[in-house]
Image 1 (spheres, one colour):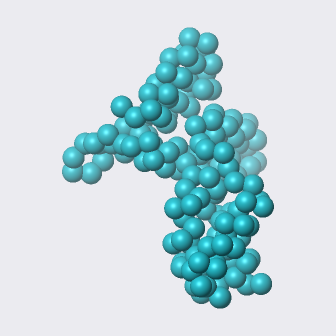
Image 2: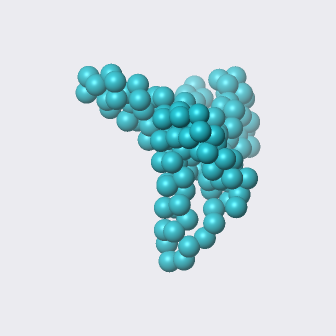
Length: 151
């Protein structure tokens, strides 16, 4: 079992003992998503820590998008619940990049790829994606790349 998955199971037990309903429900949901990912496809397999991290990132993004949808639907209680779940998931994600760090990484990726115009965004993203894996939201990254290539 991977370290991250072991940590999740341990934290689930701890949250159950502490009667922390939010953490318990969120971690259970996350473990279910991980298990679903493990058994999808033609053969069952165990996910690596990087793959588990991708599942956590995907689930956090779902929570963020759901909160926005609930806000636009004038359902603040459900939106807050989604934000709270995203906060629980954020405990398992690596430290997010700051604006300055992201700008610097994008600048160096543009220089490395030789891109000069917004049409070449894919070249920059190809260089940048492995460097930022799980440390920045894709939307934020693409906006910064687009901004720098347009300037």
